[in-house]
Image (cartoon, rainbow, N blue to C red; front, side, top):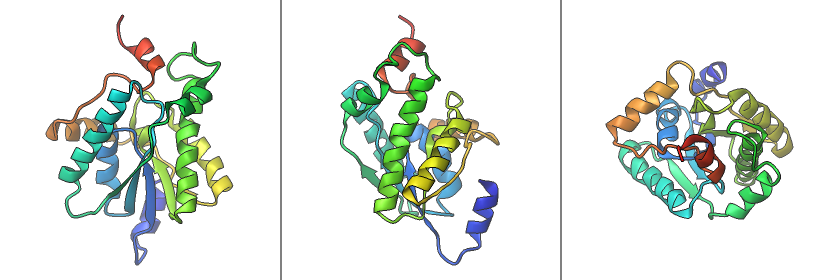
Length: 198
């Protein structure tokens, strides 16, 4: 990613980036890092989030954060409809898998595929996701999925492991500065089961 960013910085115009985001805290450091390099549009597509009330809490927190944090850089936001049945279909048969398993990989692919498709349709130069900032997310798998989707949809994927170089720690600092709601579980009903106490 760093090599790619260095190349982009010398371009006469900012390339466009469709950035999939799951919540405000995960977006925080990623936006800080990339907003001067790309013309960013955040893509909020997260049918995995459960329950619906939690989905809208995360979406509204992201909107509120952007209104405060993003003054002057004009980050845009695309909201998809809340479609939990799409996640139910992609996780079917994997309900008993643990957090960090192939069920999660299927969820990455669901959300990233939709992002890549949207990036291709809307003629973005790049697509990416904030998911790799989480210490609970497998950046290698995320990048593997991104590489394959890049070939399918013919749009560049920005490889990343945003948790590196204290990226996750910086996201905690920004979250504290802006008093962001930090959820205790990844998002789906299975992650509640796996992470939260009974």
